Image 1 (cartoon, rainbow, N blue to C red):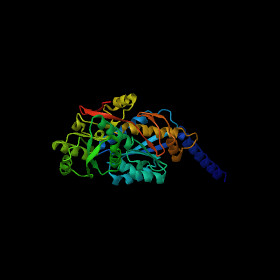
Image 2 (cartoon, rainbow, N blue to C red; image 1 turned 90 degrees about the vertical axis):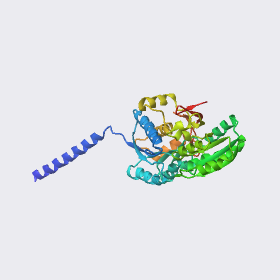
Image 3 (cartoon, rainbow, N blue to C red; image 1 turned 180 degrees about the vertical axis):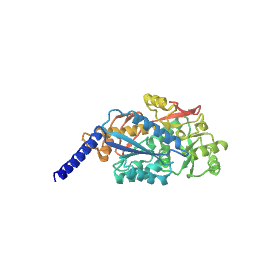
Image 4 (cartoon, rainbow, N blue to C red; image 1 turned 30 degrees about the horizontal axis):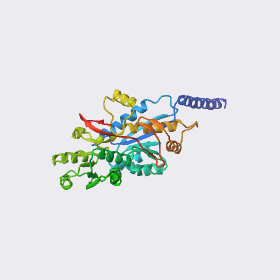
Amino acid sequence: MNKKIWSIVGVIIVLVLLVIGLNNNRIGEKTVIRIGVAVPMTGNNGFAGEGIRDAINLAQSKLKNTKYKYDVIFEDTQVDPKSAATVAQKLITIDKVDAIIDAYAPIGNIIAPIAEETQVVHIGIAFDARAAEGEYNFIHFHTPDTSARAFLTEMDKRGLKTLGIFHLNNPGILAVYNSIVKLSSEYGIEIVSDQEFKSGDRDFRSIIIKSAVNKADLYAVLSIPPELDILSKQMKELGLGNMSTAIYFELSPNKSLYEGLWSIGFGAASDVFVKEYKDVYKKDIAFGGPNAYDAFNLIVNAAESYKGEDKPSTKYIADQIQNLKDYDGVLGRLTVDEAGIIDSPVLVKTVKNGVMVSIE
């Protein structure tokens, strides 16, 4: 009997020591906050996704002495709306992310309602305000009106009074298109031609010829690759080289196609960020990189502000972002408006030696 008792005691002691050992192994480990990133990593817009990935990795590498550990999971969307819901569900249900950063309106518009329903913080890099609808959704990009006003102001400065438009049927692009149409009369600019096309179109000659009849002072090309570059090349071949755009030349992997042309581009990132990025990656910053860097840090700063001993809820993180005022980001002083949108600055740029440079 005594032997049995001692055997039982021995087993209990071993189990207790095992539990203590396991707990000791956990001492010093941080609670993990997971951030999903849904961007194009392959395809025609893959370079933009790679730039966003690099910027977020840079931000992550600079974290020091944080209360929580921040894991990042990247998923490839190829700017394909059909993949957006699948990517979001995978990040939320399998990876258990607390937040998602994505790019392009067709993706953000699909992820936003999913994030809202599942109470996951979502920050999109896109024009369409619908991606910011709800308590958990935000956009960190300049607004369509900011881009349109800069575009129309530059037209006015250059004495360009008539405008032809080519625009892709895409939620984010339609937001910019609608702003240009809405605001054009304020600047005394007449829209004399308006041609819409859809994703997948490759032969634009008929709408180019139709638009050329009106002989506009300038043609706005509102599209993303590959349609952007295909259309622009065909326009040049048919004599319509007087083109510009609002932000979209920034998205082209072949900027030499637009050598010498002016357009609206995203605002300048801080000199410190630009230097760090170039030192690490030996290349120029791509579209969305500064926005993604800021978005990652907004999530981190919101979580780190939590005073409790447990993990902050996603509602807490969302509330902190919504109440953000005058945050010093790499794109300047940032404030979130009532709609959950962070409006960042734009610049007038030109393409010089295949690179977008400011002319202001």
